[in-house]
Length: 138
Image (cartoon, rainbow, N blue to C red; front, top):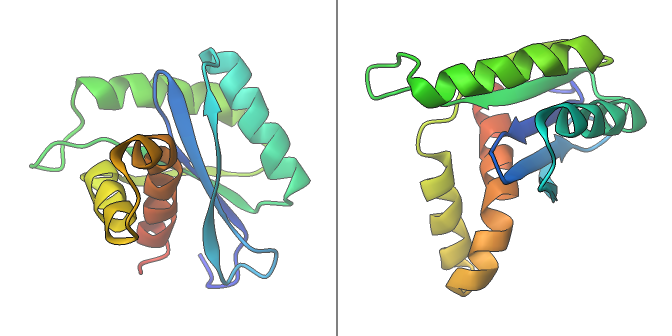
């Protein structure tokens, strides 16, 4: 992984899937609009299409691990999605621990003064941005 790698990060969820990306130079991370209400195959294809459009070099999916760093029930569901994504992705798919990213996203958005209803709409993509930051080691 390099600091200039173009990354598309995914916070996979049953109803909403948050997305974040780096700029074309791979330097700046920012949230993208979430995918809402898509079944797994359609969600994976939409992510793959976006990765191709953005010329992403890697997809990073947040993996929900428990406090001991072990996969729980939700992690198994996410791994099933990762396997679907790997079949359609134009680039390699990696995972990284997403523990507490949603809580951190809400906290960041609250610090910016956003009301709860607005935070709920943006939290998944901000969580994806945090996943991207963690993957890059920052």
